[in-house]
Length: 224
Image 1 (cartoon, rainbow, N blue to C red):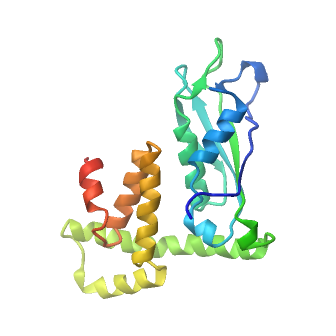
Image 2 (cartoon, rainbow, N blue to C red):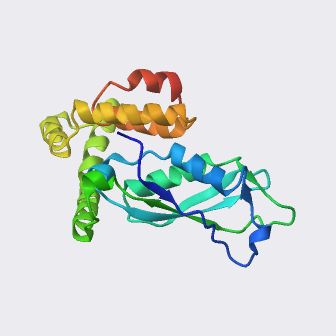
Image 3 (cartoon, rainbow, N blue to C red):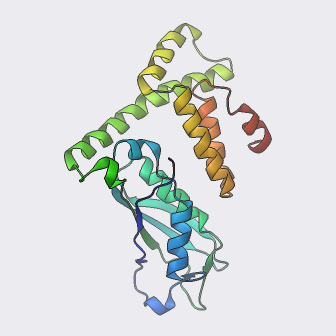
């Protein structure tokens, strides 16, 4: 299951030096923003599997036409939750109404809270979450070794005598057919949402771990 069933959106928009009445408003109001984010968020697979919760603060600016720019994670655990919170904030671009006289250089901070399924995960265990977060960050180095190898291989630059090592790393990381199918499903969901950039990032990742299962999507939708 890719969708998060237990996601709470903190709807307080934090700004500096401006009254609430002067702030941009999401079209349809607070409930519309809540519904939009709940519909778009895909609970990241690693955090879902490891029962990781968290509040991610995403800062961004809104242009006069309601588009979002300069979005970045202001505060988060540095794992896949950060990426998903940032992704859905970017999807709100064009959905904001900006009042006259609004200072376009204002940073808006939107907190988004992720809570895993309590029926499966039970009460939050801080120690287990911290361990899982540390493991995620350690895995990134192994993942980078895999993706760098295949990226170089496609360019004819890889040392193919090391491919057996890379294959072992893939097994260690769990990059099997089930994993690839999960990422394909996630990419398909993003594409349906109109997030071609996010889908292409997932398809390219699949290619860069040595699979050709996303190649047709890349050729069709992700041309340079």
